[in-house]
Length: 74
Image (cartoon, rainbow, N blue to C red; front, side, top):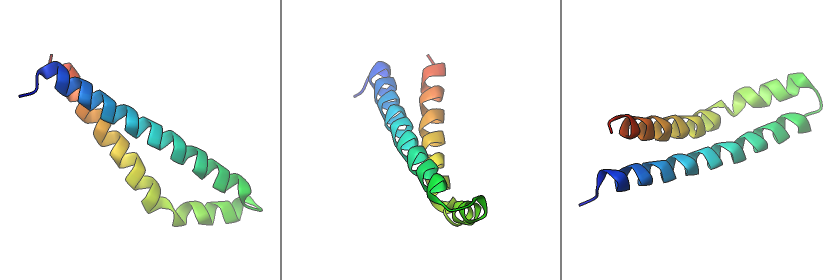
């Protein structure tokens, strides 16, 4: 059986992995935006890729909320 501290540590590790994943994707999204010839093409690409961005962001939010809930129940 896990202790509460172990559960919090695991949740923190998952949260930090989600943060790292989000930062990597943010860099890719920015590079994709910057690579477009003009802002109108960049905006069209941005709208087209929304489902992928939403998925990454939702994973980060879920990990953050789970960690914060465990941490706050101390």
